[in-house]
Amino acid sequence: MTTQHRTDETAVRDLFDRVNQAWADGDAAAYAAAFTVDADYVTWFGARTKGRAAIEASHEPLFAKYMKGTRLDGEITGLRFLTPDVAVVHGRGAVVKGRKRRNRFNTKVNVMVMVRQDGEWAIAAFHNTKYSPVFNALVAKHDPGVRMTEQG
Image 1 (cartoon, rainbow, N blue to C red):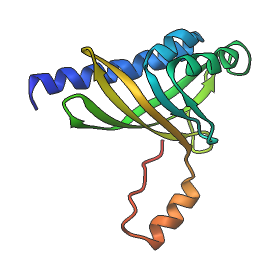
Image 2: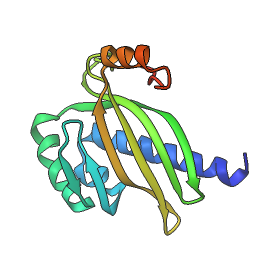
Image 3: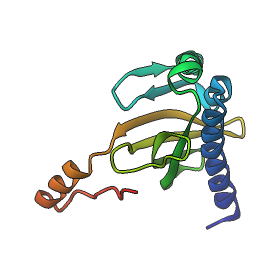
């Protein structure tokens, strides 16, 4: 692993941490700032938002009311650089409140495409989906080619 590769991996992980902190702070502007101007954002229930401004606008009422006082309990589970300026990042996490933690019932699996623009990393695409341990176990049992996502 080159020094540049380590530096980029650290920058991508720092961006992930900034997103989590912005959510915990209830700061829609800081949350949206992690995304590219033309980012694609798909929620776990299939709603699609296009662009940083729309991501910010959609999160303002969430942070003010429905998700007020919540935080993301998440982690990066995979990180691969497709080119020096494009990374695919897999993760899992949950929106939790107080001392609650991520569990098998609230965990979502997500994928992000992160890009370097003007020397800074940003999220160009985000997709979040519900994790089903029962369904994944059934699929894996009948199709050995399916790679199960570790749950935690």
